[in-house]
Length: 328
Image (cartoon, rainbow, N blue to C red; front, top):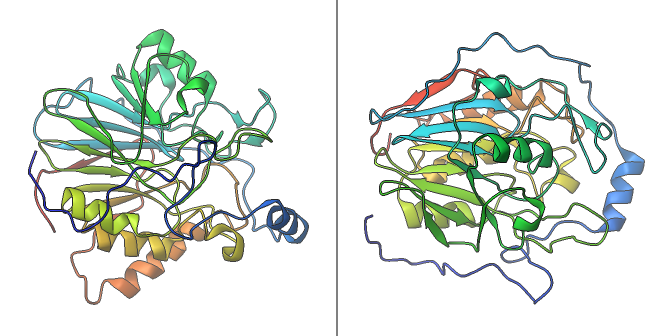
């Protein structure tokens, strides 16, 4: 791994002994704002169900110097690189919530059947919200493949199987060629009424022979994108969320919108960015088709001075192949 001379303060996550916090002033809204949102919501239209096109079965392994990234739905992505199969925030359940079968229903099914997944070596678990930490899926993976699960501090107790908990900027070697580092995000955690921010949230950077791969998880805008670029250099592949962003007065603290995702891609100097976290669960108020449209508008505005900007809406279930290389 290349040495670097940091300008930023790569400090652990703020923690008062009970609760974690975001960097600076980027804290999520409290209960009063949640109630205001619930009482004033103006929900955009969503279909009751969306079908996926048939997807090819992924390769068993990829070890040819490329990165294969298959977006399966929401924040679930199969990353195949340097001989390992890595899965981010795996969710195959038809609904998400504290009670099985109840909660927010999945509009778009997983683009790959669970049984079509290759053997999973590592799971990167960004945080413990139900649309990211799905215990039934994790239990099925633990029974079938026994993958190593990396997640944030105090997040492992909700996870079936072998778990490594990491603070921000802490790393864990996945193999002699791959290393994962847990990196900051602007968000929050909680699965019940009394555990808000009791476990840590974040994203991951996987350093590989093909270049660094960044999985943002859930995040609002913040200084962490510049810190990640400083720490790891230009990102080869960035997986950036573009959905669940409306209304902005409420969601901006925890979710980037498409324009902010484009700005993050530019800050990261990403060779290629793929959109995630849209078109699967109805979590906020924007219409179903708004995130791709807003992304297209943001890209059109940004590409004038940035003609090499490569930010794609992936076809769910189809592998995006990224060649090793440096900045676009």
